[in-house]
Amino acid sequence: MNNSELFQRGLEIRKAVVGAEYVEKSMANTDDFNRPLQELVTEYCWGAVWGRDGLPRKTRSMLNLAMLTLLNRPHELKLHINGALRNGVTREEIREVFMQVGIYAGVPAAIDSFRIAREVFESIDKKA
Image (cartoon, rainbow, N blue to C red):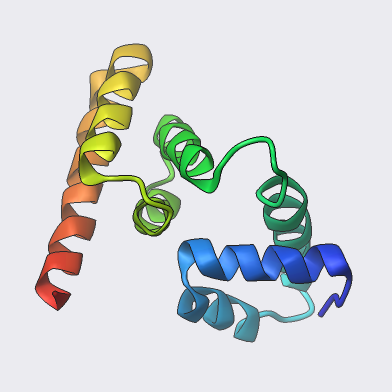
């Protein structure tokens, strides 16, 4: 794996947002085929962009929730709902993001996002 400073910063941020266990599993499952993608995502997405000072992580998480809903990426949305909660986004704020998305991107996208969020919340509540 890449040992650049940007990669290491990205790895730290990625673990803080989506969870160390998830990231370590992703890294452990790398092979010659997908290693370049894992390195790119970690270095540039997490290190270069998430590592910038221009927006707080909470805001970045809220933006991600909206964009992942728009892109219809339920697996990533579920992951980033958990990350948003880690970054201080409240359940009420998550609801408001999805309400806003419903107006601008369509009610079906919002309905799916509410369903996914409910699954995440129920999973968290069962552990508590």
